[in-house]
Image (cartoon, rainbow, N blue to C red; front, side, top):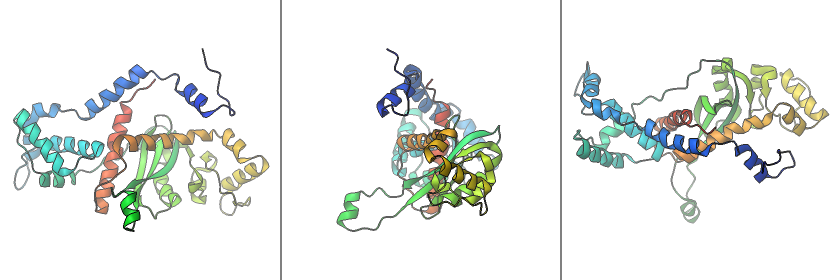
Length: 309
């Protein structure tokens, strides 16, 4: 029996069933398997000597014993499954026994992975509807029990600020800060860098900033705070939205701008943490930023390979 169309009064389970009823689970399941196979593509083992010679060409000092492709492969394992560096050495020894390649110690793995520069998303292309938000990554694996029993101070977390394309739910720009940086401050910087790619921007009240409203004008779909003034005071667009909400209601304003599209950024963060993990094991700030950036980079690749419909 075909379910009834969802309405605002429908219950949560009915809405979930209706939205997901068009998903082709056979295709979706195959893509979840294939994306890991493609991301962890081990065909570089067949060109081991060629790649090694290319990496050592023109290199000063001691030559590499393993090509960069193998280091990138280990970096993908660490980012996706949070494998410690010493465990990566154990995996390298297993590959050495099976394929006959030369193994590498965890110190060399650490040093060469730390030299990897994460690739930023491509900022060219046609304008898209986008959503912006932030999420936190834990920088310690200590449980709540130890913290409460021994009264240990929380180490905090690192924040990922990301602009998500609503069309394909992928990152087009991001920044990494500590927990003390306000969303609007970090958000404005990354929005300015990709403003030509944004047709419309959605965000929550944390991004209620006159600078962001002035940057996008009528293309801004961000609800102002409850105590927002109806006077311009630096942003006519923001004041216009405040007056519209006072005239009708915030719910009606959200329906008029299709504010529900903002939830795509929550979908992205949920998938990122469930797939790549939310605990960062690095200690230095630059290493923490690199690990988060690599998680975003590799998860973007995996999302491009995922097909659900």
